[in-house]
Length: 134
Image 1 (tube, one colour):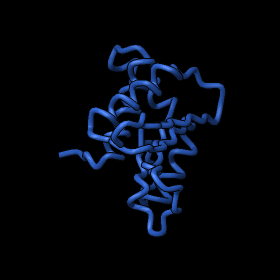
Image 2 (cartoon, helix red, strand yellow):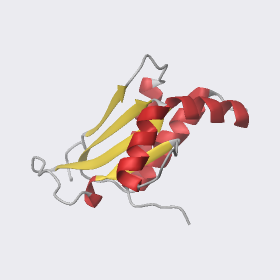
Image 3 (cartoon, one colour):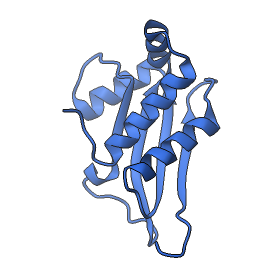
Image 4 (cartoon, one colour):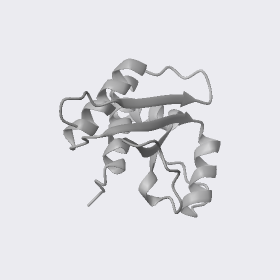
């Protein structure tokens, strides 16, 4: 996008009154997407859910029973019939984070919950950009 500022929107939602480092998390995800080469206008949705919801998502989309993931990413490119977004705006996809699992892992790892949530969100962003585990 020569001469124009890229518009990158990160939307957050949560299913409970979770303490989310909103501004730092959004800025970190934006920076990660740009670092990975994002050049066009884009939107990303990040949802913070409870364990029950995460189990349901894993069962519905991954055919896994009673599995609580810390983060799952759903790139829009993997959807069979994606919605056509306005010209110039890409819907990169959705990131879902299990808040309680993130809290548990942050305690076990001895890191602040803020750092853990940002790490999980940027990890999810890498998946939306096609970067996968080895």
